[in-house]
Image 1: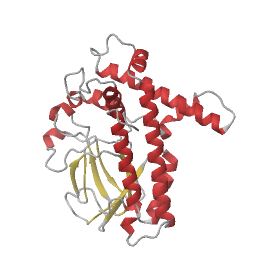
Image 2 (image 1 turned 180 degrees about the vertical axis):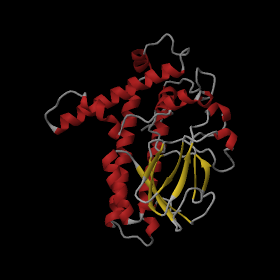
Image 3 (image 1 turned 90 degrees about the horizontal axis):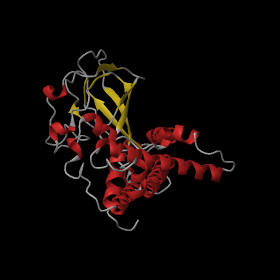
Image 4 (image 1 turned 90 degrees about the vertical axis):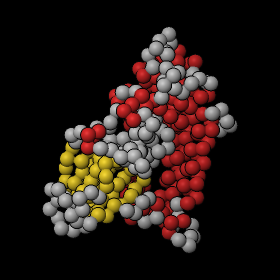
Amino acid sequence: ALNSAGFYIPPLAVICSALLDALQLPIWLNVYITEPFRDMSAPAHTDKQDVVAVQVQGSKRWRIWSPPPPRDKVTADPFTRGKGQDTMSDEELGEPLLDIVLSPGEALYVPAAFPHKTDTVNGVERDEESIHLTLGIDTHVWDLNFACMRQSALERAGQSVLLEGTYDVNKLDRAAWLSLYAPLPLGFAALDILADAPVAHSRAERQTAGRRAIVDKMAMELAERMKGVEPKRWADSSAEALVADLQLVQTAERYWEHYMHVMALERKMYADAILALRPISHAHERAQPYLEALDQAMQALQGWGKGKAP
């Protein structure tokens, strides 16, 4: 595997930059090369990214399953199942949702937390190395989901982040867990929100109106999802009351700022990879300052949630 190949291989950085601009979401790219007739090129596992796999040479079989209910293994991170010391058994996985062989030029979308495994044996006809690009859409990597926003809002309000004030989020059933960990409506996912935003004439006015519409939607949708997964805790509060009492608009504003900062850093990182904007001694050094800045952005967001200065 060539992990983070888009950071230092210019043609792949071009792909990352183009996809980042198209989706308006943070992007990561890995390259995977597998010899033919390998019965398991990757064991069943989950990823924190929404993945688009693009087959560029040879072929590869993919099997994808529904996410196991998180409450079946509360101590495991549903985004990193099948990694490290964790394993996913055939009994746990059940029947796959999809069993397909990708050929060159074909692409496959695998949502975050959906288990999948690959091989180059079953149904694979091509007697050559299999190469595919994994394009990761990194909303969860950078905490751009409702669960992280909820945690920040509750921590700042001095309230328990446990569900109903007593139990772990992973004890939710699968549908409720997926609802809480849904990505925030950012990037291309905000198009419907922007379409309903007030009409503005200047570019600055349009940007302000668009930001306001997205932030307000994030705050209200978080309140509605919180009521949905914690009906007893918030039984006496309307969604509007939760927005006010927990200062969810302020939290949404902070997450918007974080999103914009991450996007700006990734644009610079891929531009540097494409144009070689800085002198370096080794290709892998190209992305280092940007990755450090991204890490600092995450620390700042998490610190803000705990009441520290921005």
